Image (tube, rainbow, N blue to C red):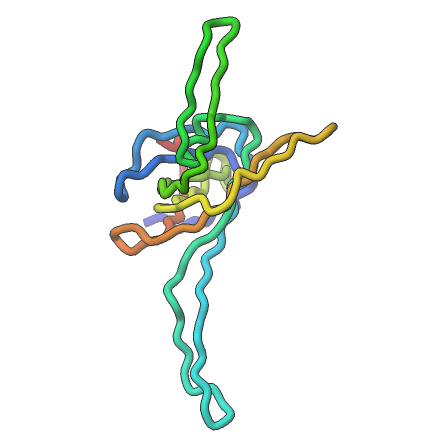
Length: 177
């Protein structure tokens, strides 16, 4: 088994998949992706007695994070938020719309992001967040002389196999499918 490490730099690709149970649907590309940030965290409880800590219990791990979009891709934004884009009109007057429902969405998604590596030409580092729910966003702003880059926050839960995420090193970069 090869033993190599990656030196990821940037974010080259991100796909989102709507989940049915834990089964990912069709990949939806997020062109112009700017950032995928994630953090694995866990709270703990301490039992104290006799002026000292007697025991520490760690609660189950969870993953939290955010995604920042660079292009306003309504199909991807809809997948994240549990809404569906529609289109009307015909060329050259096509209108693509995404209405934000007031209902609470409990649509889980799988997020797969890939970064090119700087250690070896053509290699890559990939992260798969198995099951995430958008908990905030999209946060966006239309401001003079600034780009609108929507940001969405998520919280991940374990999949049926008990995993939060998977990290992979690719000796030869492969497209996310």
